[in-house]
Amino acid sequence: MRQKDLKQTATRIYSNPGEAIQGEKVSVQARKIHKPTICSGTGSHQIHQTRLEGTVFCVIDRPLNYIRDVTTN
Image (cartoon, rainbow, N blue to C red; front, side):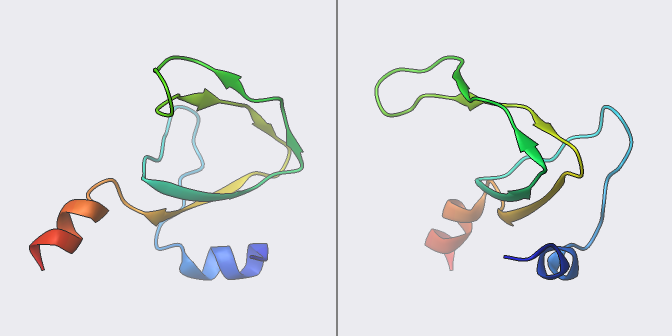
């Protein structure tokens, strides 16, 4: 997905240090992506962590409560 398309899907853009986004699925574009590391978890539920640098833009594709919303509708 191009950055133009990502920006069109965004409803709010956070750009201050310390602000965060959280979601079940996140699309990201960055100039430099560092090697991912495994933080914690067991089996297939491992948490990966990485650092993005340069011009970074992230959009939440699916919020955390996506699975609960689908089952209740």
